[in-house]
Image (cartoon, rainbow, N blue to C red):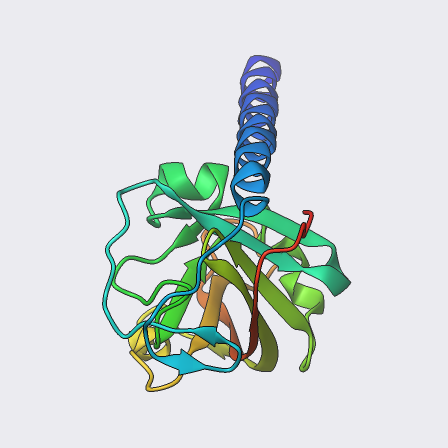
Length: 198
């Protein structure tokens, strides 16, 4: 039992260190990109920056941007994909959902005991920012829901730009949690990158 406990603790420490190092490296890279000036696009304009209706498919495991929830002190790199490896290192962008800058429903997923641990304290009207090379997309939380894993309708396309965060629920459940905690937020503003920090 002592040996098993030692191995388990060692794996946990290794995984935590790997995730922290990955986040630190990618945040530095992303900050360097965000510091560069962005040219405006000629696509459909809503709010104060352009939004595109064209579907873009990011390369698997490429960096999409960074999610920031200021009140909860959450900041994490977002990576394309929702496989186990991606969710170990970052917040995952769910394939098939919209990307920041597109009209539609952006789906992001993360584990309830890592990057989305603090979602248990999220409230209506909290601000969520998605910082990307094309601009920073600012959302306001509209509601939260608890759904079954089969309720994939929460990721259905929408005619307006929204953000859907997905994590397992209950937050304190030991083992594979039976439900999903959903945060739905609506786009309120799009801003040029101006030195936002994580």
